[in-house]
Length: 166
Image (tube, rainbow, N blue to C red; front, side):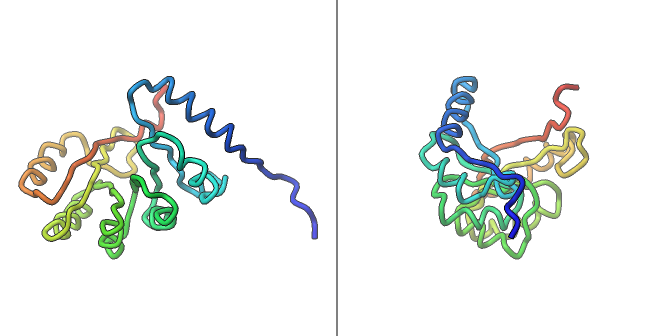
């Protein structure tokens, strides 16, 4: 067999140092490392284990299957930042995984489940990337729909600033 030409060495102490630097700059703001795409190719199980001792808000992933994959090794908060499948929503909620609501269809699905189960949601706002998210002028309507639902806990609202320099 031919040995690999490229590799990566992961240093738990370097990761710890990086988190501490971010904490120093963030002040009282809590950190939520994004570990999507196999922790950006670094190895999801390895990175999740290394982050377990860090004082962070939780972890975020792009998709439902990533959240379910890390749940056995991560007791803290997990947020799915993007799409989740309606068929997996009950399992996500059962495991305490927080989800994103980004359009009317995802909101309706959550509202149906929230008749019987507590659901923790975050609202994604589209601020110009045209990926997923409610448009800013839709937020008032979305919030009104959530007000009468005691089993829905709105934990956050976020956007993706892909071109923050602009």
